[in-house]
Image (cartoon, rainbow over all chains, first blue to last red; front, side, top):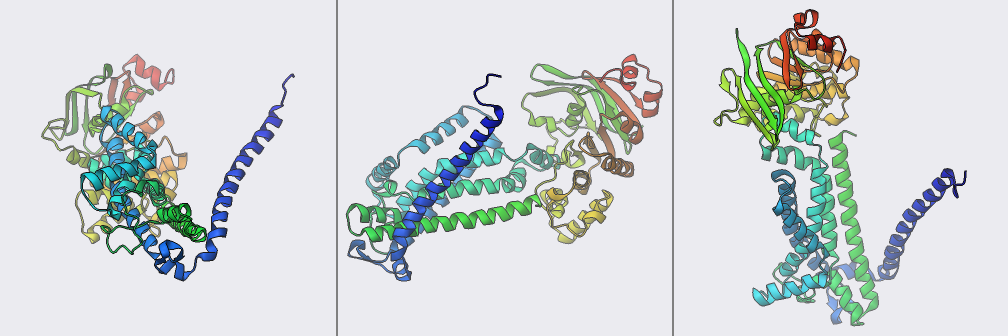
Length: 282
Length: 251
């Protein structure tokens, strides 16, 4: 035998390599989140969450920013989720691999790789200049919807593809129409995966500053409707940090954003897991 | 003679491939007809033409006629939804929906527009009883069907099929994924069901064909080599190829 490394040792080495990769990934995540929380949590209290900013955010709270974030995210999800899931259903169930499907995929992949600042510039040119709309959270939400769309489409496609064909056959053989089969059997079975896609897209939209930089108006006032200007959390923390207004409040804002995303992710995961367990009888 | 299904000069093609060649067979009401033959001989393709499941395949082409109760099921005026309500199907691998046991059986009723809750509940119970599954599941109707054993899942699929009261039940190797005990239960069930339904069963298991069916058709390379009374086909086959197959010389 003139092997340099025996299969047994190779096995051990590779196991260690993979174990270390997993461990390092978790450590990186913990360091980033830990650092943000460590720096940010000291300024976070009920007053910080519930009051308006004072002196451009040098002191005071971030209540309008939290509300702005919720509005833009809601608008983004309400537009991107039906569009993305709808396109995925069309591609997977209603058509074969044809040129239109290739075009949709190409479009979505390109959309996914466009830098966010370009989305921002497009938003400015389209909503503000071309349509003549004022700065508003609605415009920001629409831009974010475009950003979240590729993720939702791609993950939904995979989720629908993963539903066994035998489910659809069973439904069709009972005399169900295509739409009855899609709505009663395929989509319910794909919901856990689709939800993951929506959450991923939503998290991307929620944490985006550059894309909305030119369209939301960066107002510090409390927005009372989606057509008011506003300043979502990522934009607020960017502004505070780059203008040197208050680094402490910038970290505080970041901590609130991170916690918000964590809460949404954990709650959704729990709900989806319960649903899957019930559906699959485990 | 009273035939439920009459198939005349049926030819089926997928693209250029000629899968079924000049099939002629009549299927009698309320008896069990077995289709036997080696893998790839066209048995499954044949039963899938009887409920038009092959329509899902783009390259499917056919000529010849298939009559159900004297009506051409490929007539453009025929609603395929109605057809599949009349001709139910049980698949090779049990394929319950990832829903509760109750919802699996109620599914067919609901998609056909039945909303009467009491009626649905009664029909679900009757169907599960008829499929010999009621006693095993009556206390967990709201639990997912995916938690049942393979044999129970297959009986659930039969219950789901009979809930919409079809005339014909097509079974595509319904026991091939099941253990012997579950297989026996399904076969007992088939005996019971033939009173109310016309059953066409594809099977790889020749003993199963002799146990459950009155008629048998032997498929080979897309043709029916021989068909007739099961006893006669197995005891005194007229074609040499049938004899070779049932004595295990090939296939």
